[in-house]
Image (cartoon, rainbow, N blue to C red; front, side, top):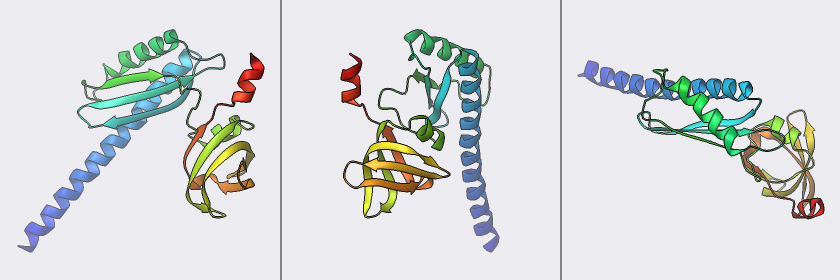
Length: 181
């Protein structure tokens, strides 16, 4: 009886380890392919993610370039990625591919994104309160090591470790947009 319980646990564990490893390997593979295709087309790969089930994955790719992303950029990137994925047996043939720009209120996915968008308006949510606050709205002042310097509209200058960020997005600066026009 002991043996059966032990084997059952082990089989369950190995099943879940295989599922986790497969999803991780798929995400790495997708990111690698998307980065290569984006670079070939002089585009920046902003983010790549795989959601949904292993048998019906949805692959989301966000690309950008300084002058903005066109429909043609998305189409070229999509066709390039599809050509590689269709030959690769790592990904289920029933995948759905979505390629788009990150949008005006793009998500900030890395510390480098905070550096790149220093001076821009953003909203940031942290896992734990920083000086009693978890939600920040204001301007990215800069990055110092692993710390983000942020000028919050409510409490002024704050700093917090990037590792505490749960979600962050740019916000449209309406004053700046109106000045441009």
